[in-house]
Amino acid sequence: MNITKEFVKLEKSAVKLTVTIAKEDVASNYSELINKYAKNMQMPGFRKGHVPVSVLERKYGSALKADVTTDLIDKSLNEIFEKETENRPLPYAQPSLEKLPELDITKELTYTVTYDVFPKVTVGDFKGITVKEPQVSIGDKEMEEELKAIQERNAVVIDKKDDEVVAKGDIVTVTFFEKDEAGNEIANTKRQDFAFTVGSGENIYKIDDDVIGMKKGETKDITKKYKKTDDNKEFAGKTKIINATVTAIKVKNLPKIDDDLAQDVSEKYKTLDDLKKDISKNMETAKNRRVKELKNNDLLSQLVERNPFDIPASMLSAELESRWDMMAQQFQTTPEQLEKMIVASGQKKEDMLKEWAGDAEKLLKSRIIVESLLHDRNITVTPEEIEAQYAKIAEEGGMSVEDVKKHYADPRAKEYLIDDAKEQKLYDQLYTEVKVTKGDTVAFADLFKNQ
Image 1 (cartoon, rainbow, N blue to C red):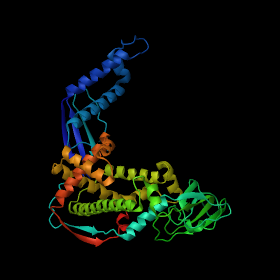
Image 2: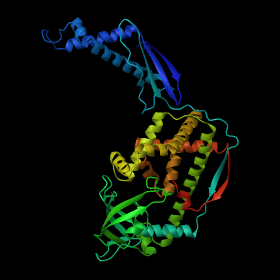
Image 3: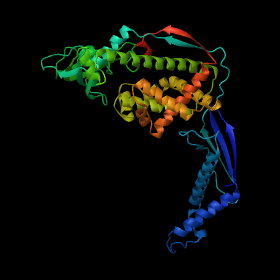
């Protein structure tokens, strides 16, 4: 196909593409399509395949021209984007046709589309950048907390007697819903048999203290007044009435922290000391990984600030929708049902997405800077470097190299490993070009907050 094209850069990494198709291609495509219809069309008074072209044109002229126009646009765009690298549209940014052009088979066909492309950013000078590395130590306190967590995970959960009441630390199952001021159930707020540990705060309304003292089968209305500074912005400053029914009460029977517990955790442990050694190793690995992540985030934040650029609207929209879907998964519901729950609480999905937009944009800019640096510096990894990655993962996870390779046998999983290796190689380069200093002392547990 004989095509001429012109790209014009727009704001927020958008592109306007104007395409002109030669009149010879317009005529040949029109002729090809109308002959195809003529061979397969059935009309009263004519045998199949013998409908004159002139009759088709009189009866279906406008529709035929519309089909040819659409076909020409699709073919030309496919041809352009197969060869184009810099101005390819984002996967979730379909080109938008400004106006469907009128087809004249004796003339060229010109049309214009707009779409978003991957942002182009050139990361400049690294001088003056200082990255702070958090200082973290692991001692007896951290070991004790980890052993308590293991103790909790290996606890035996048993039902309380029917005449016993809910106490802090119990696992309760509650069915609840919101009520309006008239005492009626608010639609789409009911949750059936929701389980949580009393005192953990792991329930949307934070009714831990309110269910203490209740018996199995007991129902009561709980009036909660939320502070204006409440972490949940949907509830901040509001009063809610929650109807709660306790449907089950269970208690944890904690095992002793001894050799028997270590053997229950895994057959590879013979004594409690064996378990402690592994815990120390795992905590050290987790610490190093998290410190590296925080360093990288600090560096990227500074690079984003130094290299301003706009995020395509479609890219930000896709990221926000992805976060919404993840939130729905966390609440064990569908995105549509989540929206109904949010509306019932007096909020709007659109308002929440706007609140998330700032953090989402920062994250996207960080990703784009990494991708740009990988491309500009032509960062690659060798098979030998991937083998080294397998060995490192095996050593950190207490696995064999063969088992690690089996885990990454899937092409997508291996591609993820390769991408991660490239990024680590990039960061190793960058830390030779910036200054790294000791940061604040951070407790091991605090290191993982706000992940």
